[in-house]
Image 1 (cartoon, rainbow, N blue to C red):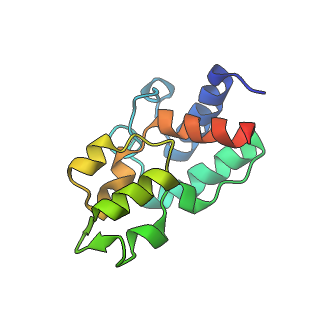
Image 2 (cartoon, helix red, strand yellow):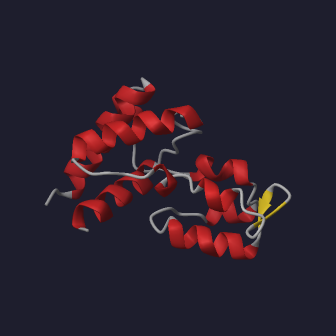
Length: 128
């Protein structure tokens, strides 16, 4: 089993390569979008690199559950309902959604994901 430091280093390497950011910009608290400049198109590259690095399979829905975010059952206008937020918490248990919940505009979900969230996701997949 890999240590938390090894997981962080693997995630960091993947992000540096995928996003062409400086090594020291990738900290546990860095957000993928705001701090590292990721765009939705970068998510596929990040997923691919992390799968390769860790020898695991990551479904894109584990990052961005599009079916939930586009479901009229969980969405009103451009925001998630309380039921949608509850479902999102179940599907992204690794993500700290506190900031998102304050203004649950669907298009903002990617903006709250941090490097630490990615590390936690990898950790849960390696243990599973």
